Length: 220
Image 1 (spheres, rainbow, N blue to C red):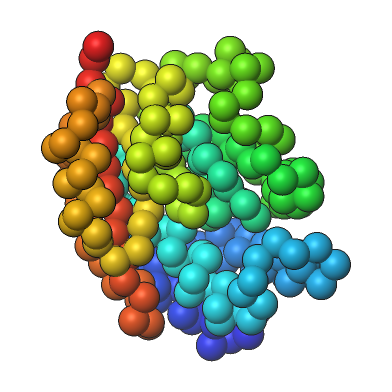
Image 2: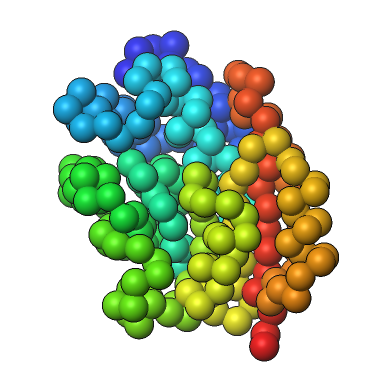
């Protein structure tokens, strides 16, 4: 990783209360190199520059960290090339993370990164969260369901519900806040969630606006 991009990563992480040590920086550096290498043969991400990956993948993934408790089980739905689950695991080794994606090549890459970085307490599963086998094996196991680029809000919340423990939280990482979409789902439908809060933010060193929506699963 070029020195200027490493500095962006270090300083950007501080904006989310994360202070990267040498081990974490080394892990991100290796993750970046492997992502760029694999991306030459397999289309894992449309972002192909070091700076773009640092800003739009690594720091975007870390932006949810302030909203996560310290010791939780997380299901990352539609995890793609490992975002946000693997960056969160790098900075919070205590997290127990399961990544699910329907694209085999992306799961192959995730498993490669998990092995390469020696990460423990994280698994990558190929399939869809709608699949009966995944529902049976993972249902009701998680404190948090998380999605950064998976589907629309309503679909994410509906699919998240059976995987969450009672009182668990579904966290949707979205673009600039869409009050209309949030209102329509949380106020005009009978939903099993309560909107806990919406956190607007701008990613460090960029103009990319994001909103983190946190929904608490209600007991039914």
